[in-house]
Image (cartoon, rainbow, N blue to C red; front, top):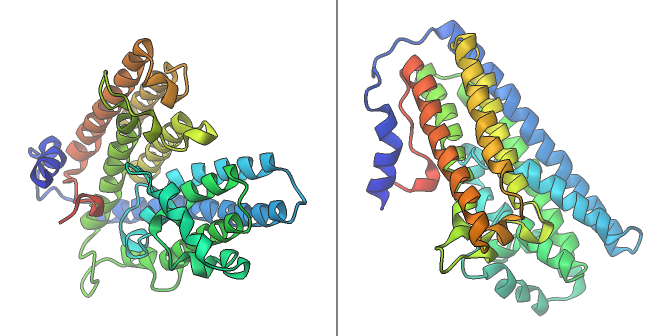
Length: 338
């Protein structure tokens, strides 16, 4: 399986010039622009996760409505999905991808492990640091959604607090002095990760490429087969935002590529990237029912399949535009294993 994944990553790039020259001045501008974009998204998640924790505490105190918690959960989830492609560096080292968003949950671990809270008193139940000692399945947003649905306080407050802690930690590990952003900016001799500018650009492009794999996966997981759809695997279906998350992710990927490579690509190539993205989002918009409903309805499965195909075609088109022009190889994603 790992060999097949590797082949799928490399096929679009196998004709690229390995020694394609990189204009260092333009590369530095690209890296700076990329990091500014990444910081905006990381700061958005940090801010929204903090707000979710505040809202959860107010709800548990009886001061606000459940609807306000729902809105905060949606806002935080949407900000997280924009970070989903950066599964390297701090998010990898903190194991944040799985802890913040335990999905796909094929064996209902979130609901099965939420009982771990039952063994402790209310003081621990409301403590975000205690959440870190529990299964990753109950540390993040899927658990917070379930706790909100079940009206379980103070557990909701603790889990949302843990998500907020991750928001702060991810931000700090990226943007503190000598953090990951500095590693990417200060590539070269003595850098333990990036020895040249091209390696940094490969990391950025590989993140976008992986993000498109994840976007397709968000639709594929609940599809199952015609006779055995798996609607329970639709992400955040209880909030009704499964399709919104795919839309958010594709939008973020497109914006990252525009911000990262606008110094190297011609305007017509940037226009092509935008047009391809818009066409894919239109395919997504053709799914007229919530994803968990659509995959179980024979007449709605075709639009879902069309959207999956469009995302995969987008992945190939982006590789042709950016990879061919820049001579980049898609790097390995940590999520694919060694």
